[in-house]
Image (cartoon, rainbow, N blue to C red; front, side):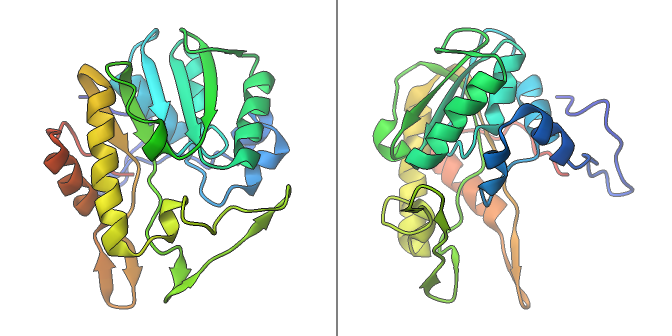
Length: 228
C-alpha cells in the first residue's frame, strides 16, 4: 500500500512531513492551538487518503480540536468523539470555519461529546478509525498533570480522561476500546493509530508495539506500518 507518495523520505526511509502550523492557522479557529496533543495535518491527510475513498465514514474517538475534519473536506463523512465540552465546542466552530455542514454524510462532519468508551460501539457504521490514543499517567511520576483551559474545565484531570489512568488499568481500557472499534467497523474496515514510543532515561516504552498487540487481541490483522 502506497503511503504519502508525494513526500520525500530521509536516509532511513522515514516520511518527511512539513510543520502544519500555517495550514492549521488558515483552516481552524485560533483556539485550536490550545490542545496539548495535535496531530500533524499533513500526516492525517495521507492516512485517510491511503485507507479510504470519498463517501466512506471516518471516526476519531479522541478528536481533540478536530484534525480529522480534513477528511470531510475531501468527501469523507467524519464523526468526532470528544470527551471535553470545551474542545467539542471548538470542533463545531472548526466545522463552520471549514464550510462543512453538520451530519455524517459524504463531505459532512459531526461531533458527539462524551467518553468514547460509552459512545462506542456503533455497529457496522465506520469504515476507518483514525486517531492518536492518550498516554497513561499524563504526569511525571505519580502526579497527575492538570491544566486549566478557558471555560473553567480541568480537562487533564478526572477519571473520564484515560490519560490519567495508571498503566495497568489504561491497558485494560484500551483493549476494551479496540474491541468496540472492531464491533463498529464495516467488514474490511481499518484502524490507523498515530503513536510514538517514549524514552525515559535509559528506558524505551514501546507504545506502538504494545498497542499493536492490544489490537491483535481484539481481532485485528496488521496491514502496514508507516514511519515518519
